[in-house]
Length: 344
Image 1 (cartoon, rainbow, N blue to C red):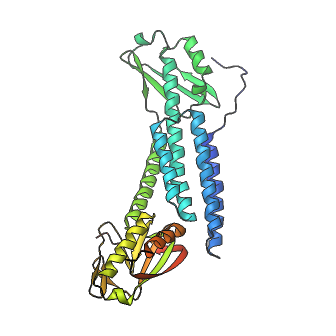
Image 2: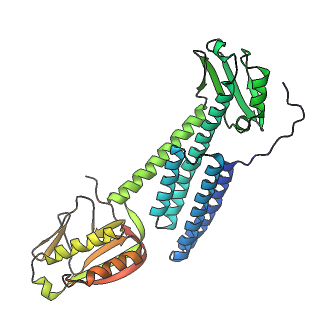
Image 3: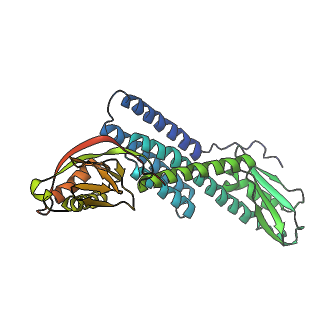
């Protein structure tokens, strides 16, 4: 039955708005990146991009609340991954990648879970049909929305006019983004999966992209991928008095590395050797072996990626210990690149 001259209600599309927000912030990121080709990255640039990313996170949070998905576990997990990726990002490019990968993934999860919630509500209305238990086995009803108008296809005449009217008046049915197909099985209405093949392909591609990003983050954290970010370059020399004591240099380097990791260092490289979970640092006579490779000790150069202020503050504590025998020259850097430890 036609809906007559009923006025169409304009509905705000949160996913289109999120896409626009991501595009706008990415334009800002690209502009800042272009400027960085001509000058060093400024802390204010990173702060500005972080602020934009946080604003997008707040926007998603408001949309999640409006859709009633605050307690949805899949949505909560996607939000946590997005915020964690932003917290771990130390450069403009890393923030941009976090927004691009995890932001799109979050938007997809919100859309999917909202669609599922709408489908469940539509199913609930269909289940109110008094004669549903006697409907023919395998009979199907499809419901979808076109410009806010609910379209119902019921070739087996399962639904009464009253239930059809409820569906057409339902906000949930009006907001459907994909077709809902309901089939009668054993006297019960059941939802069928109706996602189109292109939609399934896009979802799988997004899942692959997100998995790749998570793998890259894990490899960077583990030391098996190149890592770039702000941090410190430390040049350590052993005092003449301490040089007479065997293995003191190795002990002091290990203490310093432990202190830096405790202070939030994302990666550390001693000489040419990136530290990983199985790394060893030990003295062999007047030499130091890192990952069983001899490194230069005049001076020992340590490169660290992390918050420069926090890392430098942590070193202040250890260098004031009367048992610490190294003299340190510390340089704060806006950008440092650590090499990857070989996988084999």
